[in-house]
Image 1 (cartoon, one colour):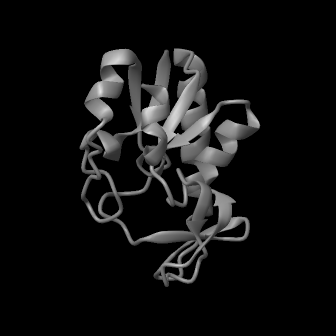
Image 2 (cartoon, rainbow, N blue to C red):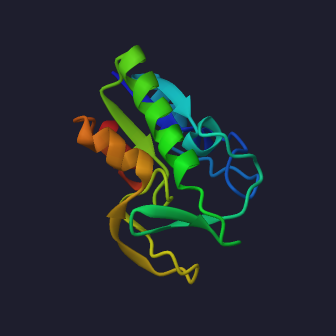
Length: 142
């Protein structure tokens, strides 16, 4: 099966802080599936590093107050395009992210509080029938 995967989970230093979040089960996942790495924020035109951002309703705002909704939406569109081009059947995305989070995301106050919701990319993929898994669900795919 072909899977989209957040590049930061593969060790790519593309997170807002210039770091990665390598997941220990990704190598095992790669033994069973073809992985297509993506970083919606970079694909939407944002730099690395960049100010942290959180969802506020239907907008995405950086902690500097700058509205980055369009970049996040553009990144989500590019991810969907790659998903369709490569025939990916599901996605494994970084949990709690304003683009990749699925089910729970930060509440927009930059206080670490979580709310129910999806990031822009997870929402876009789900709207097109693509199942989205967080990194804590990788074992389900093994």
